[in-house]
Image (cartoon, rainbow, N blue to C red; front, side, top):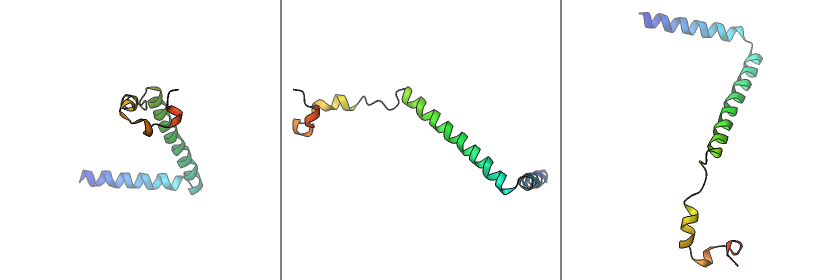
Length: 78
C-alpha cells in the first residue's frame, strides 16, 4: 500500500510542477538542458580525440601489403 501512496505523491508533485511553469517556460528549460547535454557530448568527443581514440594504428602497417596500383599516385614515393 505504501508503494501506491508513493506513486500518488509523485504524480501529484509532477502535476504541480508542470502547473507551476507555463508552456513557454518549459521550452526555455528544455533548450537549456539540451545545450548542457550537447556540451557534455562535445566535451566527451574532444576528450576522446585528445586521448588518441581515433588514431589509426592499423592501416599504416597494412599499407605495405597493398599492391602499387591500389595506392594513389599522391601517396607514391618519388
